[in-house]
Image (tube, rainbow over all chains, first blue to last red; front, side, top):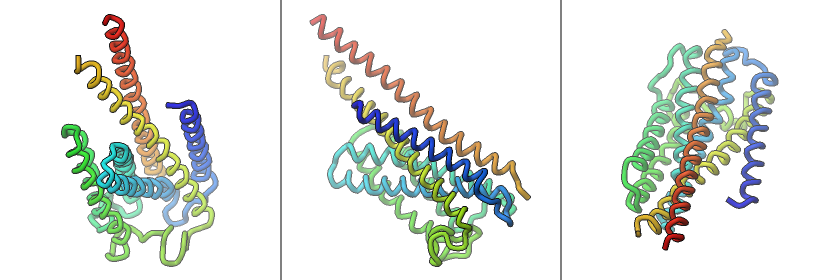
Length: 233
Length: 50
C-alpha cells in the first residue's frame, strides 16, 4: 500500500468516526422522541441506514458481477465478493433490528408479510452466494457462477421496495422516498438525523470495502508467491 | 412506553456486529501479513543458498 493510499484510508476512517459521533449525538440528544412509539422509534436511525447499506452493497455486487462477466478481470470479482460480504452483514442487522423494533410496536417479532419475507429471501440468496464462494474451489468457474447469482439476487431489491405498495403489509410504506416527496410527513430534525446516519453508514461502507479488498489482494499475493517460488521448487 | 431495553438491544447488535466484522478483517489481515513475511523470508533464504 502506498503512503498516499494509507493516508487517504486513515482520513476516511477518521471522517467515518466523526460522522458516527455526530450521528449518535443527533440520535440520542438532538432528535425529539416520537410521540406514538416512544424512544424505541430511534431504532429507525440504524434500521433504515443498515437497509440502505445492504441494498447499496448488493447493487455494487450487481454492477461488478456484470463487469466481471464482461471483462473477465479478477479485480471486479474481488469487489463483488467484498461488497456481498458487507451486504450480508448489514442485511443481517436489518433482520435483527427490525424484529426488535417490531416486538413492542406490532406485538410480534416477525410476521410473514411481503416486505419481511422478500428481505429474508434476499439475505438467503446472498448467504448462498458467500457459501458458494467459500465452500467451492477457487477458479474462474466459481467466479462466473457467483457473478450470475450476484446478478439474479439483485432482482429481489425492486420487489422488496415496491412490496409495501403492491400489497397490504404490516411494514409501513417508505417514509423517506414516498410519492409525496422526500421525507414527507416527517419532522425536519428527524429527516436531518436520518440523513446524517445514512451518510455515516455510507462512509462506513467505503472503509469496510477498503479493508476487505486489501484482504483479498493479500490472499492473491500469498497464492501467487507460493505458486511462483515454493511449489515450483 | 419507551421500551428502552429494545433500543439498547438493537444498539448492542448493530455496534457488536460492526466491531466484530472489523476485528475479524483486521485479524485476517494480520495472519496474511505473517504468511507473506514467512514466504518472502523463505524465498530470500532459498535464493541465498543457491
